[in-house]
Image (cartoon, rainbow, N blue to C red):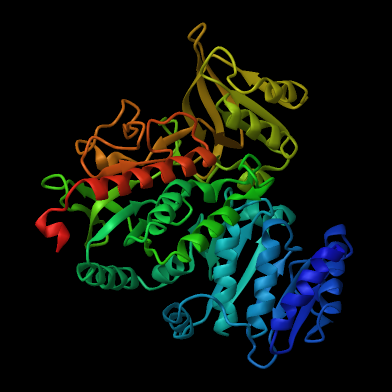
Length: 528
């Protein structure tokens, strides 16, 4: 089941297991059960602190990882491979007594929960957003025996997925009722369980920020551009801060990355973790889970630029680098928002397995749309690719691959007008044929929107110069229309929205900001 290289790595990891744990398996006679059995046998062979025994569970194949002395346990329904293999390894380590990396404050909040909570999470093995949720809930179950968690491979239990109307992953249920959908961190889950926690955390953050001295360089955004900018600034030996709503940004929603020079292959979450680790090595003051809602220009060159946070509090710096990134662009048609996560999806890698054997549409004929259609064609019954223009805009090699697929239909010169549904899920799509003006409909189970990105710059309107597309206008040095304010990455008017370009632009903006600091004298308030 596992190759020799993985076995060697796991054997070293399993030396960190301090307490005996047991794997309690409920297996059937199907191929997935055989795969699960082979996986469990491999795990048991790698540590004398792991034992295997038979058990019973309505879901087969499934297995629990249980610590006998405390009763703490987590369960996987289906062999956790793909992106969830790391979740399996972490669950074994945490239930075996290896200390988690989370803060003492978060661990204390988990252990203080005094009521039973039964979580279930539906995931797909190709989903890069799911491990964050699965690992957070697994950790909660490992630390508190009152909490249980089952991670369920939705592709192996399609009847459950249909009965619970799960059309996007990760989908979390608590005590049998819907709890959350989409990527969530441990702090967000705890805040959702304790509605007052978010307000208390915001108040504490505001109080801390009120006492924070001004930075020399302050970066907005934790993606490739923001990370590069912060690292370059910190390496100059100046006081650097970074504020981000979530570290990694749009990279977290990227599956395979194969064009980052010197890195033949990586994945979005792995790259985001590496960026965060490198930022942490440079003594940068990082403020996460905070959304910036306003930029306050300096009163004069050399003065302090301010940032007001949505959760309360403010930050100030002599120079600010804006790298807020971008998000998925939506169609803006009736039914799109109403059926979001009910058939309308934006990540074919994450949600594609939930549409196995069904009919779906992909909106967009650029590289991302054609790549999505190619990926989905191997899973679903039929893909209809809809493009507004009179021809596809994807690279020729992608178009050739698309044309070779028998279960793909391409419709060009089509303007999507409405996502249709029955109130619970998507049932079809309406569009207008731009050649003859005729209104047409398609019977569908899902719609994957792949029409590009929109910059996260609404909060900057009227403050810095923006292009008609809402991008921050910058000069060749990354300078915006405001003194002391620079910008980089996908939110700017720089062409070619690529990770490697964003990193370079972040470094360039940081060097320009440093040049600004040494050439423009600080005002009295900024020098204090």
